Length: 206
Image 1 (tube, one colour):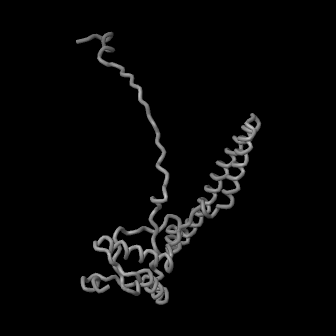
Image 2: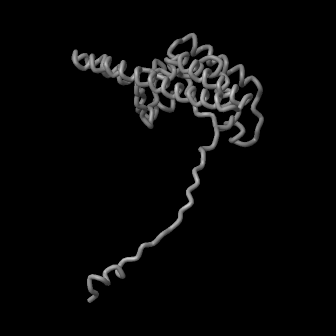
Image 3: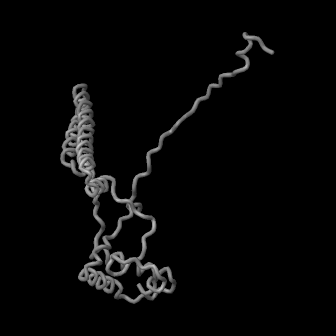
């Protein structure tokens, strides 16, 4: 059994050198545009529903003479997509966002920083470097202050609803901030949009 002086031999210190490389996420290309949802709730309006049907018929006026099922489906898909873009449009963003509501203030801060950057590129002297560094700090500090003020005001509003036990306004304000939850599977509804069809015959006829 080794003595106290020999205990250091029971352990070995291993030194390793690692090389980490950070990669930026790939930039979005025109082909990778995020999926947008059509505003299908407008189909509850009989006039808009009629306009959508007429647009579909107009885009399908040319006969489909392709041989494969894939070509038939592609033609139908493109026609319905163009008709929906013309008549229905896309769903607009409903949840509140501190960035969108303070767009003008944030734009002024970024523009001030950009002006100092242009001056620094034209005249790379020490004074302009200090001015640009101060502008970057002011921009970051200003954006942080805008964000913090917005969240404090929104938190006070939600807390006020909770203190008054106004659950309806409380959940409505919370949903406006965080957005509604979406289920992975949506049921097929009737023309009125209120009744969910569950039987097989009703689904096929719809």
